[in-house]
Image (spheres, rainbow, N blue to C red):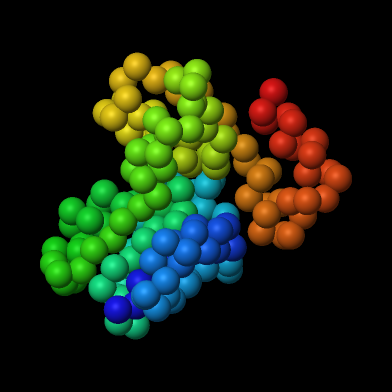
Length: 173
């Protein structure tokens, strides 16, 4: 079986690397929409349209499972695609996102029960992490901070540059 992994750019390669470690028995097809990245500041309709195009492409290439490794796509498009499009396209196929599994892992990594979400403006505006944390861990506190400069730094291979430190510190503070 071939699993499709989609992101709006290169960031999803870190997700793919971890999936391959956990599930080495599968083949993978990665699709990064670098031409239209970043998705973080785009509207729901645009993110939905772009994400659906990617899902359909990966389905057409034989992937029965597609993982949205993009937080913004998971926040803005996942539910609509799962509920409206997959049943129409092929109800035997699946599309999963990264928000729910990330939230499920939080209990093991926090002592303070206060979670910081540093993400694109679109992901923060959706409050998807806050809602999922509230469902699983209602006692946890979530603080969200949009970091609009982080994606361009990663996508332009500048994440480790001295100038990137300024933006990391700015948003964390």
